[in-house]
Image (cartoon, rainbow, N blue to C red):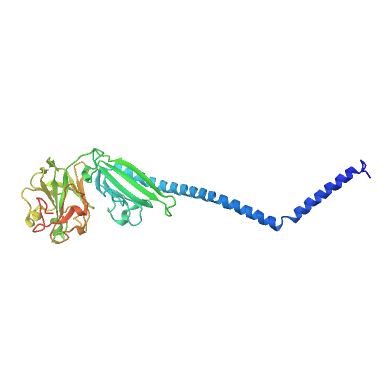
Length: 368
């Protein structure tokens, strides 16, 4: 029998109801076990596919963040170092360009010493402020940590010729490399050149021989200490108004009954007590006799080693030697002598105990 028009709506309503029931039952029933496994596998494949990209993105972000931290602290320390070099009057001592544990001591216009170094123990960039006991561990403060290397390359007034003679240094090229603790960021490398503030004056004078620990003791030891200066240049130099200092004190250099002019190729002896020195030691008659303005050179030359600095009449360092008792002449009556006038002033290989009979060559060419 054919459905009438009145029956069709009822049939459609039944079908709609049946479809809704089937959908509801499907929703209530949920996924089958097989379907669930397929969904899990699909999700695992998606995660596996995209996880390297997330890992890479995280590592890139982490590296950039660490590198920013490394750069910030390295740049802060470098800026302080360069600013101080530019304000310094002269260089007292500096390590060679190949030494990654760089160290530099500077002098201001008043003769105060301050410096920077990469600590061989901690690897930090450290600052030694003016007025502190130079070179003592407690005097240094940290400017930047995790410094991998610090080097100084020094140039003369030409700007192209390197030099190890402190009196000739006009500019300094500094290279600092740093990294983070886990080495996630890699190494950051900073380079810059700084020029000393003072007008450049060059002298070809060096500290050439040191009698720092004689066989005398007490006050007699200080009065028998002396330093030889050698003019290896071709021009006479007047040292009137010059000074000599150790780590603790600066003294004026005076004529000891003669001239303050050291001739080309000539020698001068700086003493604390000319009477004692010229009585107890054989000094060449041609040596220029100089003395300090009190009864000791500096605070008395340290028997274990320290820095001796020769300053001109403007307060600029002409030469500086950081000696050690390991160089020789440690209380046995001998001096330590410089091998080469143009060699490194604080280079231990450029110094040796005197081989001369009597242990000294005061006022004449060295024996080593």
